[in-house]
Image (cartoon, rainbow, N blue to C red):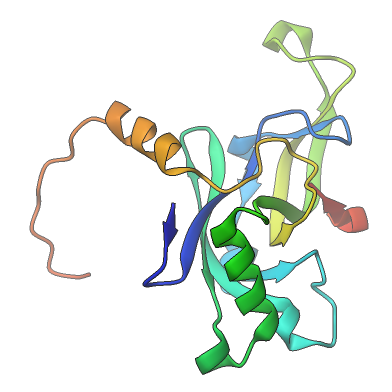
Length: 178
């Protein structure tokens, strides 16, 4: 879902799909605490660049409907003077850029267990720490892409109605890119 007013978009950044490295990141093993302290999003995994404009925005990450989902808010040209973020935003809106890739530190893992319905040829990361993620041209996880309005509508149609309540507050693969 693209929100032009807030310059934000939902991405699936990871799932339990087998990626191009023949690995799977188990959703129940994610540690997001480090990422939450510095929730940056870069373009093309240039996390260590001396060019600050390669950090194109920030995001809030959550586990939702069997996916690791991020709501990316991009910097803009007028306020942030970030030409790269502006170009990425335009390409996201046009559908030219639509994939994501994580930068994580694997903590624990194992080969698949047939008794759990897993492929013994696939390596499963059972615990991982998210460092950052990027908008990329080609991602490793086939599910890591912009979440479409149709997909979000379908998910929302399956959720039970929430009661209305008044509230008083508002791995380096390089460690491992996925």
